[in-house]
Image (cartoon, rainbow, N blue to C red):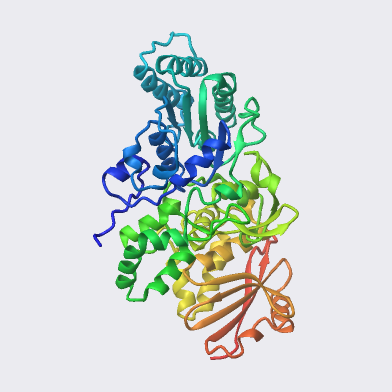
Length: 520
């Protein structure tokens, strides 16, 4: 088989088909979507295939049946009569500019107006121009109009911390989308995508017949790839990656699964791979984190820090179905929005419309922690900094817990005085450990209790217990009394027990610790 062509970052269906790139067939969803309703909304994380889905729908509604030869839609008995398509992509735009949203909408409107020979009046705002465009497109073609709006919420997510501009963009979008209901007699089908459906910003308040399919089982796999699809379409690429890594196919598949799989959007759906990341990995022939380099929202990391949430506690949070569907951007609880933005996914269904949420995979978990740590310690990535990741990793991997703790103690003193809290100390210690390149477990449950942190390298095991304004001896006593290291009695690696106390008195602020070597 010829080498596969990977459409990394490509969002145009016609280009992928015409130029022979791999296309995972999702066209069997077109027929049920057409019978679903007139106005449909889908929420999925960034880089998850929403734009390609809309481009596929655009090609269908334009009647370009030649592009669908051999695909599911070609044999589904669909009506291929062309419709006028108004496609608005809000994924790009300088929304920090006070006029950024209007400029983006105007650019799209101008393109469509030229197509249908429409001259707008100078005093028309974007909402009125959109209304006139819908009516004119219908009148000039004799067909009802299809409206596709991609990443509607980008103009809000990008400026979440600018309240004034956020409220302005909210008003513009509300007025713009209000046309969908008032002009419904001219509209055949409308599909809106985004990361989140904001329940409290009233953008969709006028569109009360908007059908949200985000958590419906029938559409659980509409974006993203199941492992069955991955194997069906990408086996040659996985084999090539396995050969480069000098391992068998199943081992490489297991690594890909752990790094990129795990997204679940309904309790009966398939676990899904992130398409963007898997394509990057197969094209570059390297398993690395890619999703966080593609413009994921960062304000949630700041919110987690400001709320003093212990990072590992994010895993295992519970939310109701209503909370997952309808969130407010400024809600105090960030967990539902973390689900919609892709930081968290459904871990398990607990019944009574209650879900347990977890990080979907190692790529997202590690990437999120990498967003968090610089908020506490700005120079952790500086290669000349004594607090660089690599130095902490070497301390642990080479069995130097004393150096690790000394470095940590100095690091904590570098944190601004107004950020000295128990939550900060615990978060920094955990993030340093987990991002130093070694496996780590926070609040690990044992038969007598749970340790604060356990870190593992090829040759060493570290068991930590932290106290805050108490004593080192109390921390060490707890490690022994609750036998945190007992489960590793048969492990050949050398173990270290580390009791530490974060002393927060202004006179003696700092980190005190004691280290015991238990075997090896």
